[in-house]
Structures are given as structure tokens and as C-alpha cells.
Image 1: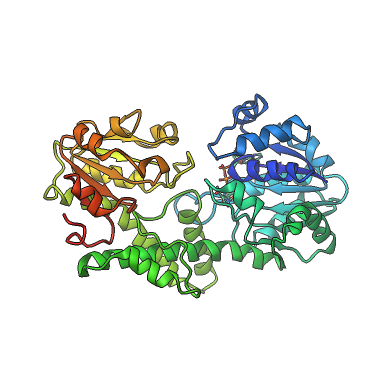
Image 2: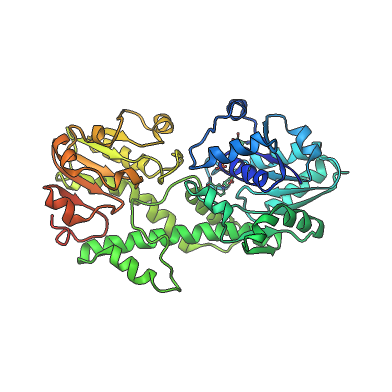
Length: 440
Ligand SMILES: NC(=O)c1ccc[n+]([C@@H]2O[C@H](COP(=O)([O-])OP(=O)(O)OC[C@H]3O[C@@H](n4cnc5c(N)ncnc54)[C@H](O)[C@@H]3O)[C@@H](O)[C@H]2O)c1
């Protein structure tokens, strides 16, 4: 198969590298000339564990290349994936489909012979219909089938997720498209990955329903955590106690500072908008968004409460800036409103993140960036753990205490045991774990 992928971001690059690894010939296309030039030099523009090796191997064996010009590779392709961004539209929260539609026009002008156009970007229900309409309007002789194939990979674990997906969802009613897409994913069939063929609109809705459900699960346990703190219960034990019930499941039940990232915030917003437009409002998801939004600044007040609500003159060290570990992605990270809230309360911020500091510099101002966790603790009145990077899980507490002006740890990911931290002489606050039990 010859595959062209339009948009070489997280999804486009990971998918492209895997399709090449499956034995197909893949060209990844992007408008961003600097990104393509970097990839052509062998540099990977994002941090994703093991992606570099996968890309390099497939470039070396001649199955993967990178270009800015769409026309030539689309002309030769059996399948064209659209993997451009679908951020929230400014002002109303709908998905901004301008990149998808612009790509569709360019693809329409270039296709030659039967071509399957597959939307991998997360797009609202009905977008496939519009992509098809645009292609037919732009090029009435184009022989295309438009399918939906939403992507479920998680940043930070994208390689594993692509190789061992829980399922592959393909939305198409076109038999020729079904054949081509089945051929593309054949190696995963052999891995026994469940492949689900559905109508195009159903596939589009599956993606939003999945993300909204996961966002709901996180928000639910966050509210249980707040209640647990008030009533003297331990949210981690509650999560385990409910998660062992197969009907509930243990994943996505970790209480924390609220969800962020490149998908959940924008996808919940877009789903709510779609639902409103169809007079089928999604009150649960609306509540999830509202609860999550207020939570991030509330975490700033939680830190301040250790000092009687005022952080004037205090220095706060922030460990972890990205929205989750193993990525450099700062999009809608909860660290952004949290740090702004701390600054509003008067704190000076020093921060460290293993991979996210370059991106953070464009989002967060007036921060001292440090070269490691101990540098981040130096002179600090409190250390706040925002992202649970592996390297933060076993810090030398004696050394931290020596570095800090005041031994206070606020652990927003519950990665430490309260008794161990307090035994070292720290004041320790965490999420949804009773402070008396925590020995504070
Ligand atoms: N990031 C994730 O973990 C993830 C997971 C599942 C689904 N998705 C969805 O996949 C889509 C892409 O997400 P991403 O995180 O990879 O985005 P991204 O912003 O990292 O990458 C998108 C790329 O598309 C390029 N682009 C835009 N218009 C183009 C055009 N006309 N021609 C060529 N290139 C063009 C941009 O320059 C950019 O490099 C989104 O809809 C997202 O919701 C993302």
C-alpha cells in the first residue's frame, strides 16, 4: 500500500511510522517546513518514548519519508489519512475544522485513481459528510471513498497503544474502502486486535464518547477525593475498592489536579457543542467541564492554605509542568492555571520538568526554570508535585529538606506515602487523603 498522511504531529508521525513498520510505503506531509526539515535531518520534533528508533529504522529501510508538498504523494497514494489538528474554535468551543477542510480541498485537487480518504483527526459527527462534499465540489471526477478511523493512542504511551490497541474503529459503508483499510491494518489483525467496522457517523461519535467518558471518570474520582478529605477517608483506597468491580474498572481513577492535555478539554467542549446543536444536551459532560475548570485554580488555594491563604513573599517549587509524564506536550496542562493562581496569590515560582520546559516557556511567564528536582527545591517554602514523572517518585527526602527554606510538600498526584514523608520532618499535603491519617 502507498499511504500519504497529511499532518505530521503526534498522531500523524506515530501512525506514519507504524504503517511503514507494517510494510507499507508512507509519506508524511506537513505545512510546517521547519518540522519537515528536522525530520529529514533525523530529528524527532516531539518527545515520545521509543518513537525515534521506530522512525529511524523505517526511514533507513526506505519506507518512510517526509515532505511539505502534498500533491505528488497524494497522487500516488492508495490511502490518504487526514491527521491535522482540530483545536477548539476561538470564542465558542466548537472544534475548529478549518485545517481538516483545507486539507480536504488540497487532497481533492491531487487525487488520481481510486483513493480512500481517512479522517484520523478527532472530528465532530458529520465531518466525514462535509469532507466528502468538499472533495466532490473541488474535483467532480475524483474517485474517493471517505472513511473515519479515529485514533485512541495516548501521548507518552503511543508506541504501545499503536502496537497493541484495545480496538481499531473504522467507519465506512464503502466496500472498497473497507478492503483498503483492512489491508493497512492487517499486521494488527494478526495480533488479534479487535477491529470494529461501523457507520461513519458512529465512528466519529465513538471517539468523543470515549474521551468524554474518561474525562468523567477522572472528574468523578476528583470530587470523591474532595469529599474524602472532608470526611476522613482515603481516596486511593476508595478508588481501589470501586475499581476492583469489573463493571467500573481501575483505570482513570487517580485523583489529581484536574485533567488537561491536547484532547480531553477540547473534545469535551466540542461534544457539548455538537449535542447542543442537535437539541440533545449532555448535562453530565457540561458538569465535568465546569468542575474540572474550577479545580485547577483551587489547587493553588490548596497550596496557599498551608500558609494561611497568603503566598506573598513565598517561593514555590513546581515539579512537573506537562499535562502528564513522558511527553513534552504543554497543551492545556493543569500546571498553567495552577501556576497562574499561585502567582496571583503572591508566590514566586521556580519549576522543573524533564521534557516540557521549552514548550512551557512560551506559555508561562515570570518563572525561574531549574536544572533538576533538587534545584527546584532550593530555597523553596513549598514543593508542589504537579506531574508524576518517574524520576519524582523516589527523591532523596533528606536532601530535599536540606535544600528547602521550609519543609512542605504538596503532592497533587499522591505519589508519596504520608507516613514516610512526615517521618522525615515534612508537612505533607496530598489529594483526598485525610490529613490526620497523613500524620500532618
Ligand atoms: N495528540 C494525541 O494524543 C491525540 C490522540 C488521539 C487523537 N488526536 C487527534 O488527532 C488530531 C491531530 O492531533 P495532534 O496532536 O497530532 O496535532 P498536532 O498539532 O501535533 O499536529 C497537527 C499537524 O498538522 C499540520 N497541518 C495542519 N494543516 C495542514 C495541512 N493542510 N497540510 C499539512 N499539514 C497540516 C500542522 O502543521 C501540525 O504539524 C487532532 O484532531 C487530535 O484531536 C490526538
